[in-house]
Length: 324
Image 1 (tube, rainbow, N blue to C red):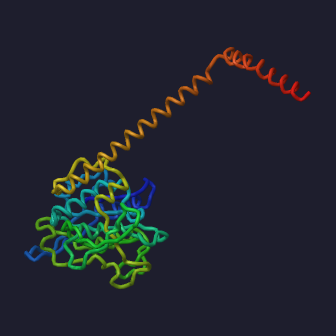
Image 2: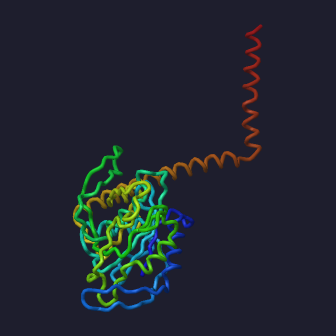
Image 3: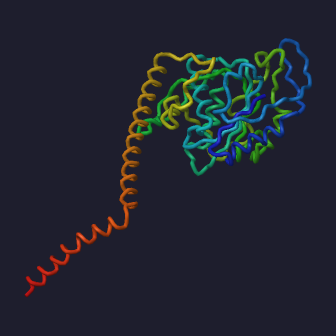
């Protein structure tokens, strides 16, 4: 099992929650789900890797991973910088190679701040959709983060084909029979007995139970809203830049449109860096000149003052004579 988190600083909630989930799940005894192939239910001990941020985690390892647990927050509806690479690869894989993660199982934990009501819990909700199987509902709204008008358009939803094994947890939101899910540890502890754990010999392809995206609100309605808006690769690049996006995963099938998009933003970023370098060079030259003036010998400065003194005295003499 792998745990990936996206957090704005090492002290932020999603990072701490990822370690809470690790402490609860690592070494826990779980009951593997029965399958249609006749494999009996068996007990197993979970082996969980230490949490990694999305920039440090290699998405290629998901081909050898049974379960992925994602812990993340949002910033104005977009992922944190240390989850940018992971989201970029996930959106690209789901758009160009649908169902590429069909052998994977996943669960998502989300953090949010209701003060940003419109984009509350947007990243965990969208990534839970993106990771999952193809959905039959209508296309979701995508916010146009690139332009200034903030228009919304409906687009088909990319999907990676992973199976959701437990309802998403959202801090402060209802979860199944609980009116409020107060901590990641609480969510993970109930996940031990409540999740549909895949059997290692058959994977998730034969699991009989399907966990819906909005299953956390089956008993109690959301306290705020259940909205979700999609974001694109261009939204991610516009927010965080192109650094770290040069290597693509084995799941990606980039097309000409993607290559043109990347080329355009790489050129823009290079131009920006060149202009920034030029400005810094000019600023450094000005600082050196100023330093040279300050470091002049006192005698030189005194000579300048003396050379100016007769002119000042002459001006005063002319002024007094004019007054007479």
